[in-house]
Image 1 (cartoon, rainbow, N blue to C red):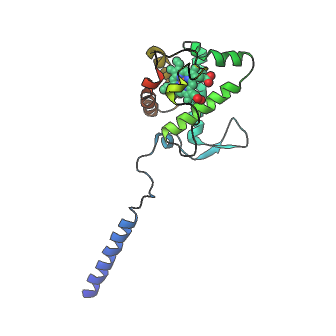
Image 2: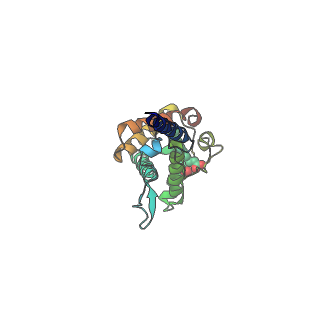
Image 3: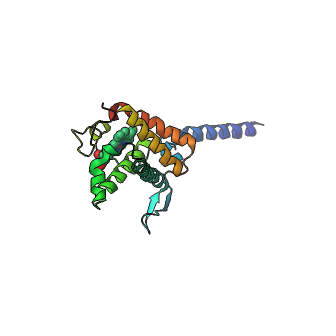
Length: 183
Ligand code: HEM
């Protein structure tokens, strides 16, 4: 009887110690980030760069960004803001377009919680102030910010991003309205 009790105590102590050890700060977060929900760091083949791998989360966000640019240009509702870029592209120079795609993708990756990328562009206030960024042809108003967000939603829908995750992206974009809208 005594031996049974002693082994029971040992067992309970072991359970407690194991429990305490697992409380370390190197545990995975319980709530996944939006980046993780969009595919996260799992490496997949990059369809745009044969032979290269890309994080699934980044591929998803890059696809959304590129589709969004197509929506904006295709609809022509807010293209007046992008005249420097469109003039370049019209002349056959796609360097600025590639740079914008990368910059927007970096911004979205970092904004949704990616750890392996950094955003090196301007902050949202400066990026959307023509005095600080000559590539922004004029200051945005609220209505054109709405059209921009709708364009991102359409870009995401074209890439089959689930509606609840598009909603989460929308919340992030809305949080930046005060910085982006300057007239
Ligand atoms: C929350 C919404 C928005 C986000 C997150 C966003 C994000 C960005 C980012 C990351 C850049 C690149 C900045 C850099 O590389 O330094 C950029 C540039 C730009 N954005 Fe936005 N933007 C938003 C809304 C808008 C709106 C509403 C407009 C116009 C109506 C707009 C027009 C532009 C233009 C014209 C550029 C410069 C493009 C170029 O490099 O040629 N953006 N934006």
